[in-house]
Image 1 (cartoon, one colour):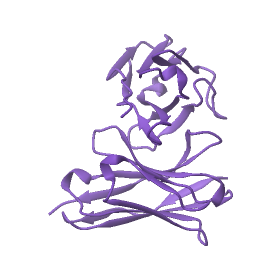
Image 2: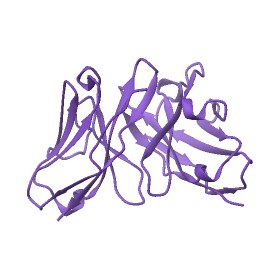
Image 3: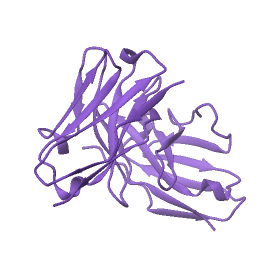
Image 4: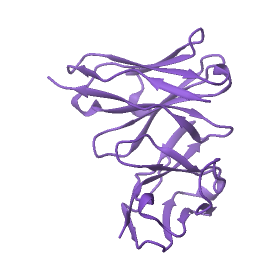
Length: 118
Length: 108
């Protein structure tokens, strides 16, 4: 059974960085892309970026280019998302998600709440 | 960049049919996926590749896609279907995943 388990809630000050983790299990890690999506309070879903665990190819939304880095550790089947230079508007729940056999996001983590507060 | 447009809200009485649209330039040429998100929960994929249902999703959920509009149809709507619904595509030109703004389905 496929599982994506994310790290716990974080609180950061403006200008700081945060690194969230997404530990996967129940499937061949290198076979499926893993994405990061966020949702601000009361807002919609916003795509952040993706990593191909087979080779490490990454692609980021233009809005986050230069501020976000998605990495992976194949030994633990874990994907990470680091967001730098945090702003108040980065307060959101951050989800990791694995694709299915196409480009749909079939499996989701439980979400990591990141709060940016002074 | 590619934009998906959804109505902010749709209301329907129990037992009736709800239709949620997702507009995009020549969206009929893309594969459209739909997600249901209930309050405080992670999204759930309910339709992928325009009209396919993942295992465990009721047949009441269906999708279509043509020209500039994709549609999620929910027949025999139940109170438990009340949620936010999002459409999503992969834009091959930018290699970006794009979400619509979401539609809040209210069951009257």
